Amino acid sequence: MNIRLVLFFTRGVSLRTWSMVGNLDREIALYRFLADHGLDISFVTYGDGADLEYSDHLGGIRILCNEAGLPLEQFEDRLFFLHGRVLGAADIIKTNQTYGGELALGAARLFRKPLIARCGYMWSFNAALENGDNSPAAIEARRVEAKVFSAADRVVVTTNEMRQGVLRRLPEIGDRVLVIPNYVDTELFKPSEESSQGGALLFIGRIAPEKNLEALLEAVRSLPVSLTLIGEGKLRPELQKKFGDLDGRVTWEGNVPNSQLPERLNKAGIFVLPSLYEGHPKTILEAMACGAAVVGADSPGIRELIRHGETGLLCGTDPQSIRVALEELLAQPDLRRELGTNARQYVVENYSLARIGKMELAMLQEVAKRG
Image (cartoon, rainbow, N blue to C red; front, top):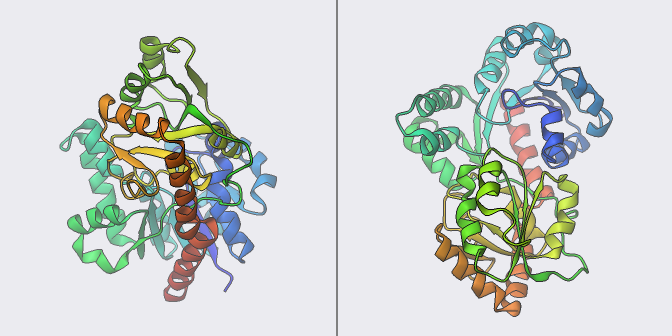
């Protein structure tokens, strides 16, 4: 079955955005897999004509962008006219995240196509934690989720915890909510012959409040370790001003292309993610795939991935709890190796690109037949 799939990017996001933060190859890997299995794929992006420069990199995936460089609202108003031919020929329309999902829903309704509402994290959950449960941001997120999820032919989430959260609010859509986890390219992210450095810690992610980096920096302040922080975000200037480089032991590296992360993960002794909450964090999956010893906070999104004492260690989100977990791994190289070996096996068995790609393909084929 030759399925024509149109993926709507998160509102405001472009291919250039993915490239600038180093995630282009990671984000398109699933769609390359699907294209290799016969799907005709188009990306609706919010980039200007510069997005077309990525055509060769996408291996035949069509780019439907804002070539004229219109203001965001004007592009959205005219999108169905500008790209109506491809939208009208589609078999399935899909969202990448819920923010901006109303536009994908509008296209599905106008062109009478099935809609798959996919979200890697729960927008309303994050908005409530960041701004308050009754904040305008949280209320708007819940409104959009209810509207898009209720109309979708399938709602795809990345964890069982997210699925239960959706069903508590919208029990009537229970048979349409499906869990398809995030994936890892386990051929790219794999252990190497390079030996890891026991006292070298690595964090990869946005420098944002929910990542809880202030607690991590406090935790390592008194430890004989080095810490590399890969990523950018609004909190970086504030945290750098407060902690500096801790006498040369902390490196603020900025964004790094995803293809370069396996080398960094293999050199690190311990990967740490102390977040207050996550969706289904790809960085932990990638670290585990490389056989790294992982310390993660016992918080939503992380606790579903780490089996404490088997594939990594879970800890509290306060500096003392993080420090204790790090000290345990620093003192036990055999434990680090055991956790890393188990983690690699766990990810290969459950989250490889091949496995998740087949789940996605089966879901698309089922929706296309029903549509």
